Image 1 (tube, chains in turn purple, brown):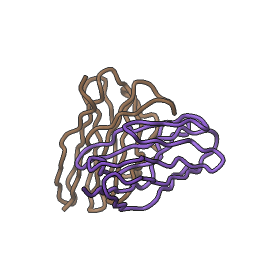
Image 2: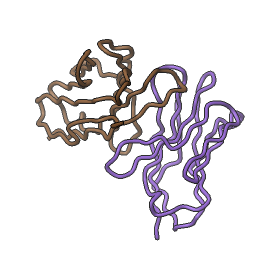
Image 3: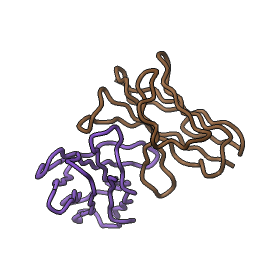
Length: 111
Length: 115
């Protein structure tokens, strides 16, 4: 079945550091891929998405490229801020109703 | 346009009691999804409903759990005779239509604690 694997946290970085959170997936067909962010005490917000191979999703300085050859969708940001501290979820939608989530990566940014 | 609303935000129940979780989708959305997040885990799909119909309940435990989305009013996730293992955050999402390209909008969640 479809699944998502993402790097375990927590990840701790200093402000202005470069961020990468790895995500790989297993799916039949051509899924859509997503990154969601969950701030403390809140629900999930869609951060960015890509719907086909080689698409790049971007938002708020975050980017991720849909790589079909490596079945990956790594999240990157060139310079993180304290306000980026949150839990980040990689996810996919494979054509049915449900979204399949990774376990989440907790990110701490130190001032 | 108000987002997805869930209440209560926090719910405490003793073992054996019933828990009722409510979800009001975004205005105009007729597709509702329930997900469960166990501690330190990702969200797991439970059930997908349209108005008055359960479309996919493949993620719902076979016993004690039920969901409905009546013609009028919020969607309800009901857990009967709760056990400690039911302690989790329960998230509702809604969408305007359905399909893998359609964004699901998530509510803030209900955190259920079973004593």
